[in-house]
Length: 370
Image 1 (cartoon, rainbow, N blue to C red):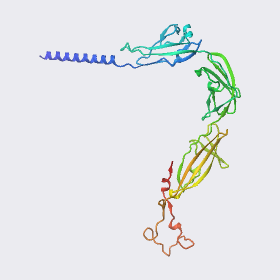
Image 2 (cartoon, rainbow, N blue to C red):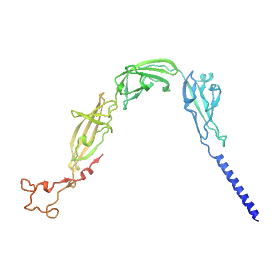
Image 3 (cartoon, rainbow, N blue to C red):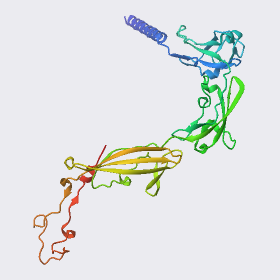
Image 4 (cartoon, rainbow, N blue to C red):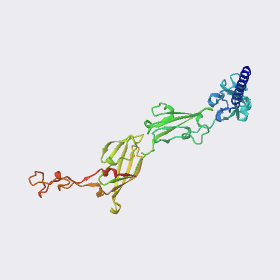
């Protein structure tokens, strides 16, 4: 009997182990596969130009990382001069005669399939069109302005009307007034008022054209204005309320009532000035007056900007005043006739002794900002 129980127990264990293995296999083989294939964005090449595969930035990611390139045209992949090639091995594609005749060709990228799912291949394609050499027409004697950061990268849209896409196939060379090549074709504040010479070419032609332009700064300083509500005990001067320029800017000097501000405009110092217009308020509104502060900023190129700030000045409430205590023997001791203390001309005790009204901490807590 004991042997029968042992055999039965062993049989049950084997069955359970078999079921576990089956379900593990089933779940593994039926789990969804994640495969991402990107053959690249549609692009252009010159008519007699081979395609560098790396320029497509193609990718296969996920459960597999390799696959095959296939051409739908008559060109050949290199190395090997073949019509299909492993994704990881492809270096370039040489267009065939029919590719050129049609004006474009299509390449297809097919991923490998996972071992557990031979049907799970993913496909993407990319279209490459041939671009003829565009006409080059260089503009001349015009201005280019720097932007709010006092820089400007020059591209073909600034140098020629209606250029052909893609713009990155144009070749631009800039030289400054001293004949030095400007790195990255990026203009900066050092180029302001300079005449820049440019040379424009294209990857699909050996032709070039020349032109000149002047660098300027047309961007005025940008204000950061805000309205304010203050108590009449607070100063209304900008030193107290703040200046309407960005964080990091600061007043360097004051000349004839005008503030010279640094680190505001990226191209130059800024001259800042203001004028106040005062309107007396209706006391029923618990306001003393409203100040319209009219700011004007001018950079070294004469670019100007303006903004208005409204400053509402509130009247004080008696609740904000703390009066000195009584010398009545309750709050403070009586004065004795024999006491010696500072007195006013009329013989009364001086406020130096009895104290004076004080504006309490309500002063600061009553300040409001719009």
